[in-house]
Image (cartoon, rainbow, N blue to C red; front, side, top):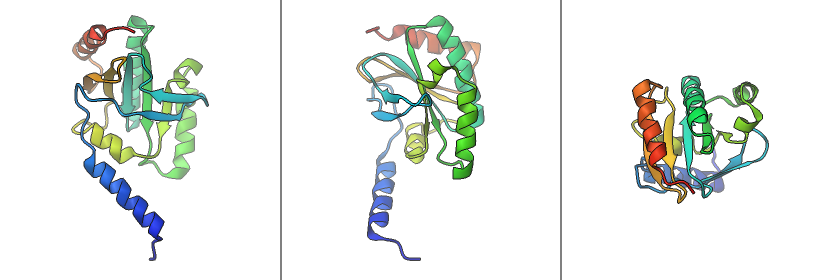
Length: 173
């Protein structure tokens, strides 16, 4: 098979960026993301406000995100909670159906803070290194765009208490 020079160069650049990607750690700058939100608007992270960013790779992690979201919305209505739904591993024909189902299950307000990611999935997996992909990875980000806390796993009382304390510890802008 013959591969064009530009395609090959793109593949090499992508492999280099993934190889150089490291897991996000507390204190790291959260990577800049600008993408189309499920509402049709633009989702930009970080955006100068404290936020909780959930990254999910599977339907099960989406269930975690919904559960974390419901708890956080009650306790922190002023804190932005954003979802990045990574679907790069899903066949192209299925992505549209999954996106439509996800959008249908969300309020318009949630859609404005949620986006489907179909590129850079390997990069997000590297950033969430060590996390079980069947659970959402939750990043607490301060107004300066720095990661203040990271949690991954099923939603439990102990896990939520820890996340709640982490959100409360972030200075509010």
